[in-house]
Image (cartoon, rainbow, N blue to C red; front, side, top):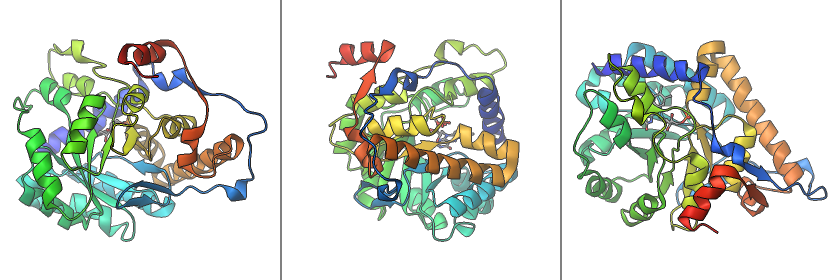
Length: 342
Ligand code: FNR
């Protein structure tokens, strides 16, 4: 069941890449152009310090996707190869399948085997026990642990969870128990300011806002229902750009993922305060369309083009982009007004 679900997710996520929802609030974020702001390319560095214990050589990462089936094990091998060749951090998909059936361990372990010196994150759900969280970290020799929040996905998923009240205390328990930094992430419906404030109190090290605008898990799960009766849930939640604005000064370092399409979206997310920026569906599409060389080519180009943008904008580091002047327009501006964001 679990392996079949993983393969379904890949198939339906790729369908979405070919027929996107349309509408991405990153389009409502633009940089004010200052024609004399530019610096010299050799001054630009890609390194980021995201949070205590999370320092990365580059500000882009491959976010959680797969593992648990033969097919997704092969995808993990290829993603890990691209991570190794480009230096980007990488996360596994949910390791719930491994807890239920340890015979699929290799489909996750390949992330470390192919990428022995890279930054690797294990991924579990918020019902995992402390013992399972430790098993996940151990299997991957993980440098950090992601815990995903996905109430909208569970709600639409036919076999989904219907009990969510234990999630916050479990996150707190895991964060206190494990040796590596814990990052809590959404899967594409976004984290509100209220949630980020709550996570800060639970002892996690960073929050990945995982907002709307890219892969839509409500739509994926509805696609797994014969009658598709949950179409009203498509597009649930807040966009990544909105979440970043909402989470400003909430007391927890934030990462951005969800609907990041190109190096300009990466720069926009960094300018909105993200410590680093992740992509899942888009990188998966590149990999499945063109293989490992295509994904290495895309990530290399994104890093190079981001450095070019930093040079023009006068940002020596990705973190310096947060000092750039931005224009916020349209529905994102309305969101800021409604939420009292200056
Ligand atoms: C995901 N995502 C995900 N997230 C997670 O925390 N655990 C998981 O197991 C998975 N599985 C998964 C499978 C596939 C095929 C995709 C495309 C995505 C969610 C992912 O990490 C990310 O939060 C969202 O996909 C939004 O980012 P993009 O795809 O819009 O860049």
